[in-house]
Length: 224
Length: 270
Image (cartoon, rainbow over all chains, first blue to last red; front, side, top):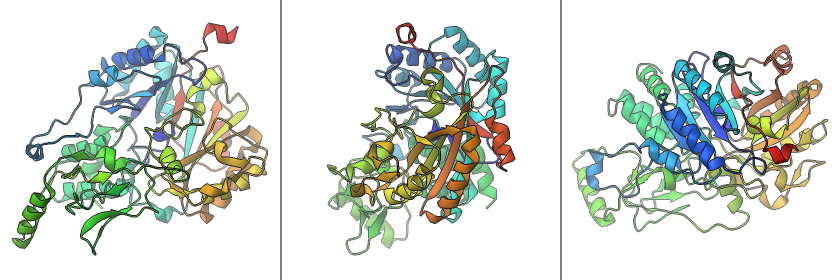
């Protein structure tokens, strides 16, 4: 999905960032897709993803609609991943984020065996995705390359902000909020884990890589 | 999107949340206010912020006292304490902003959420891009810059004269008045969206020409252009696009890989 295609960062920064997602083709193989998408996520959850999501219902990090004032000291930060599975009641796109290629590879083997018949894509470093597939006995069918950003690049913020904000490809994590979280970590007002949780809540597809975000915030804490 | 000034306590939590920077504290009324021309109706603020439902008068009183004492309250940054964000009822042409900017709203033309495109994600089933072909996704407005359709039209009109075919199952295509020229309907040209994707297909031999045209036009737009290009792989997983792009001087390492596990139902293939 282009919402994962243009995640900004150096090659080194983008290692340990694998998004795998499943969807049906509109008007062709949608029938029975919800059950297959649920199966996809149930299989994914066996292999330690760091985030999962249903593109129209959200991921495991979500906003709360009725906070009480005590929430400033104690909040429920996560939705049970099984709720994400149960939320799939129509044809949608579902995703799982991995930070360990070994876990992804085992998941791929299970997917191949499961033979769900719906399209599965990996958004990651293309050579690493290909290697993962080959180890799982899968030959890639098609590939899309990100050629990056063009035009007036003066419109873009500094790299740590861009690395954090582009992890939500739908633009739900604003540059200004990413900058605010970097500043709060630098000032010691929140730690990287807390700041990452705030950021991840805005990504409605559940593709936010929290492991990577924490690393970026740690790096930004001591640098420019 | 609007902010209910009767509820807003000017805590400023919503200001950095807006991807377009469209929210500000209006000094005339000391309340958060949305610049509707810059707002793209993405609903990030409304959906993404958690909501308390505190009494605004109480909150303003406490904030006023703390301000006088120079004491900073450190609230959760993703919360609206008084649920002051208020969606408007949208009509044409403004509703097109939400269609392209709110990822939870399906595009009417394609029925797909997000930016409304399937691209190469379902290529194993659709066969849209074949061996020897290249499918482009040219995206405007990402990351976090936004784009007006007037700028998108500059690009679509520049590309239309090349040997390309715009993807018909695409929300931007559905807004074109004349695909042969790339013209987009006039009543939305000033509407701003968070991002939009133009998809097109060509043969590998014309990829350099398309890239060159995009690179020529992009600097003249008041936005950022992101380029993605896809192709079918052979039985070994190789493709002719990768060496071609490297030969054109592009450095790339990230992308999407379709595993080829999707298939058409048996009746559809008969």
